[in-house]
Amino acid sequence: MKTPTCILVSALVALAACSDPADTPTTPHSFDPPDAVVDVPSGDVDEPDGGEPDADPDVPTEPGRTLPTSWTVYVEADAPPAVQWAAEDLASYLQQMGWTAAVERDPPPTCAEGLGQILLPGQPIADATPQTWSMAEQQCDSGVRVTLAGGGLLGRQYAVYEFLHLLGVRFFHPEQEYVPEAPVWPAAPISRQHTPDFRLRSVSLHLTHPLELGDAFRDGGPELEPEAVRYIDWQLKNLASVGHGGVGTGENRSHGIDRGFPIDAGFSLHNQQQGGRAVYDPDD
Image (cartoon, rainbow, N blue to C red; front, side, top):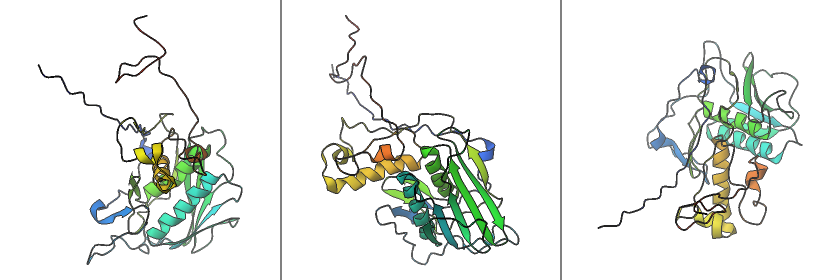
């Protein structure tokens, strides 16, 4: 009699928040991933030989309206580091999509004609859950002002990455992302607020078995830490609310916690897998 082979599948479960009709983009995204997948560390987008951009950023999204191609992301100097990182990410992705973008402080009091402004407010949304995010667009002739806000540290970052998702960016893998050649901007003014339906959403590493990230998290040196940091950031970009707390013993040891993932601990009551030990014995 043959011994059955035990196949252990390390499930990566991302319980994404369900969207209601109000959260559905008004303009469908059109892209061809094989021609536009980029390597995260380099951030470069390779255009196929003879290829042409799918969209011109100067093409109006609705009659009589043209989007600015020069954008400024405004974030307060005393904002948490995670919000600062999200602001820098936003400017970087806008640049990869062909727009001029920079991060600054002290936003002007009103929408400026001909310019694009993205505001990350210093204060969270009042009377909202920590994971609630919102985005609101204001138009002034040829200028656009977008406010990205959240109810807490996670929600404030979710607003940034959901905005990028709305523009066509896709976070497929920690080492591979899709960035369109030009943003896919909805025709109707952006106005959304959403609270995830599930409070706990996670992608978990099963480091007991060989994985591509095993060395980086378990016994890798400082040279592998950037790979692990990109994995933590990838979780956040896909709206995980629970993730890896950090890596190494240096400045990245609490990177996931700094981004807003909770500190947790636990113990096993019962375990029947591969010689595992637990505090509860069902035969006692």
